[in-house]
View 1: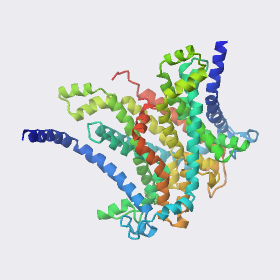
View 2: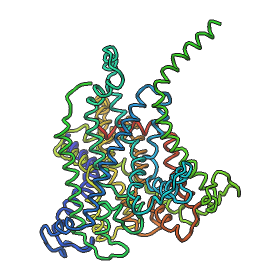
View 3: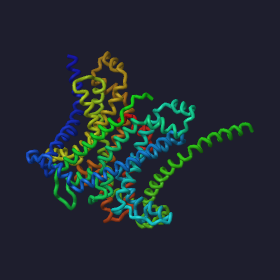
View 4: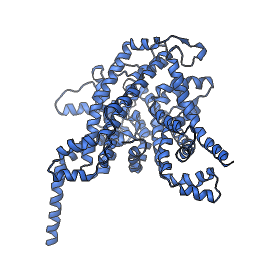
Amino acid sequence: MKSKKNRLFIIAFTLPCALSLFIMYLYPIVRTVIMSFFGVESVTARMSEWSFNGIANYQKIFSSPTFHQAIRNMALIWIVGGILVLSFALLFAVILTSGIRFKKFFRAAIYLPNVISAVALATMWIQYIYNQEYGLLNKFLEALGLEGKNWMGTDMKFWAMLVAFVFGAVGYYMLIFINGIERISGDIFEAATIDGANKIQQFFSITMPLLRSIFKTNITFWSINCISFFLWSKMFAPVNTEASTVVPVVYLYDTVFGTTGNVTRDAGAGAAIGVVLSLFIAVVYFIMNKVIKDDDLEF
Amino acid sequence: MRKKEKVVYREKINWKKEAALLPGYAIVLIWIMFTAAFLFWIIAASLSTSREIFSGNVFKFATGIHFENYVNAWAASNVSVFFGNSLMYAVVTCVCVILISAPAAYVLSRYTFLGRKPMKFSLILAMSIPEVMIIMPIYSLSAQYHIKGRILLMILYIFLRVPFTTTYLLNFFASLSKSYEEAATIDGCTPAKTFWQIMLPLVQPALITVTIFNFLSVWNEFFMALIFASSSDMTPVGVGLLQIVNGMKYTGDYGGLFAAVIIVFLPTFLLYIFLSEKIISGVTGGGVKG
């Protein structure tokens, strides 16, 4: 009797959560995967209107020049942006854990861009920093006697976008690094100091190796962040998608929902892009687990 | 005299230490000063005319402080509608997510039953699935069942926040002592009553942290809103701001644009000023495992 009552209680308490997992994740994921092997024009098309066409959707996206461009841009954001973000984040984390004053204030100020609306942040960058006439960047260059540039022009747009994105992202990875560094026991550094190791030696021989699993976390999160990169690209090219800023999710969005100039839609191909991006994430997880083994070191 | 010497001595030690840290201070200060200059300029621009902005004289306020930019943005540019929508989405989501996630997190952390492990695993998996994998079926489902407008967005936001919230709360419930429940059972409390009256209040700090994160997340959400907010009366602030930016080439009201940016930015900024310690410790305390 009691166990039956208990079972009822467990079901009642977990059902809403299980239902939301089913409706929001399980069913859509399965359907998207199936959809990626079918010819589906409109997203709202019923399953009976789908026509099986094997891997044609995948062939279509992999032969699309826009998709190639999108992958190239994503890879560039991943590598260049990744190096910048993780270097700045690590630098700030090391500085803030070195016994600096006002640590809490600095930490909060650097993390700030992560809390405010990214749309507002992007708007500030585009409308102020990069503005050709009154923008901060051109005013600064002018003061140095250099000529200003049109940062939102085709040639500079990608880099303008990348820098703005990096600025906003650093704080988050910094917090994870700080958390990792603070968990390393102070005794290790004390012992190293007694043995005559200077700060830089300590950083490379103690901090870095012990931060291995933190690096793993950060690289994984950064990769997922890059794979789902969308908002900044949309903000830097709000009306028409441009080759300089296109990324896979933008390409997917255009393929599924159409663009202003192009009304042909292909939800099947969109699903294929989604599956490819999910595979990227799976590969990232797999590689990170293989390459950087979770250390058994207790510290 | 002696006392004075002592003070000087202490300062000397400090200065030596501070001097070694000087490069660190310099790097961090440059970064923060850039952020601050950036924000102050936007605030000043939001109080200036378009002409002043273009001539680069936003800090002079030659024609006075133009609060009407805010009035214009709020009323004419529809910011009041976007703001109201976002507030409603965020508040409703925060409440409903707790009602769904807290009971589930409690049961998942305290009881062993069939399907417990798969469910925990699914929650973690759901957090790493890109949103592009789920939007298309959701779009067709919502069209098929004629669910649209604000209700649809609210349902989506609630569902989207369930995996994170449940996983976050799970760890907190797991850390509570079993003796609370044992005592409650002896006193004749049903499991449900024990949860609502005893266990839930005990994780209040975690509830607050996770609610802050849910609020920030919904307030700043963009992708779902872009796809599912089909008309401007249900648009939240993120997409609304994009619409204002896109309309700029017709209106040319730069003061109003920056005022709109400030209005969108202010709620989360104020939240952050008061709760930054809680937010920062929450970032590394919950979902992230090092």
